[in-house]
Image (cartoon, rainbow, N blue to C red):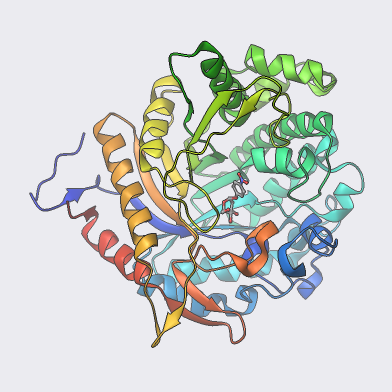
Length: 460
Ligand code: PNW
């Protein structure tokens, strides 16, 4: 528990990590450079109607060519940690098999540039850009994809492990499995609940096998990032609403947390594997692989969830098996994504994790907001984003006071970028990107964040 040493400052613990996040497909561009093969997102973005405006990541922020300037910008903004992901199709264009050294060269240059500026690199091995060649063999519904992932982990840590202290296996396997294979809102755009549960299991298996490969390669700190949230019943006194909240908590949170930290699927989730005919992919020994200890849990949090039971309601396609559950409007302020803003959801989530899954330190690996930004007289004034970030950083501070072992706060995102199904229409950056010129302009929120980092605290 950290007491404010300065009455005017809510201080964070010594060594608390502050930074920003990105992901390869969202910023790099250079889709054909140096032997990169197509990923499922290249294919999906080219499928009519899947991404806003037909946008693709072909150019994105052109970070592949501008990384040196972007690292300079990070330094100017006082960021001390940079979370990025590596593109599997650059490193292993055939999915498995031989390494493409030119693909790894890019990350080698990036890591060196970060270290020269004293910025700690945090590398994520998979942030959704699966090589299309692997999807052609079933993608995450194929067990072999998990083993191919472990080989990616081994090759990447072999090249960068001497300089990258912190490694993440997967980013948000919930999105990969359920947006990718159940609702089809994300690549590869399949709509098959059975495939989604199979994918969820193989993603967890990939994580576990990846942890083993990272350890064998000498990784110093190994983590997994999940998109988790606080799920509450609309009426806590109504047992039907309470049951609805429990099921959605299972499909969002426990289906990943319990295998990793408790060595098994919760009974209600196991029942859904059975119902959708997906239990056959769970082999003897898988859960032991999945439950390999990790050093840090990354938490991505954007919005809370409030649910209610309603007889006859169709299942939300993102949550197969959730018939009879609805999401009543809460009249909370929302972001440009229509996502409700409620920082108490983050504080409560972090405290819950430290109670239900004790012993693993936590780090916020993504948190941020999309608002409509405009450049006026060479400046982007974004008070709503500052308010969002301030409220959530405050919630992290409060979670520490309530006993959570918090190691850092990493904002989403460094730059405006390719926001998946929304293309370039939604801006999450601390830094504005003018896509016509690739000019970068720090928003007021970036300058606010720089002050928080400089003080290692918030003013009350
Ligand atoms: C996360 N949903 O994505 C990702 O990790 C980032 O790459 C992304 O840019 C960021 O959050 C903002 O969206 C999500 O529909 C995308 O529930 C969609 C959902 C959740 C997370």
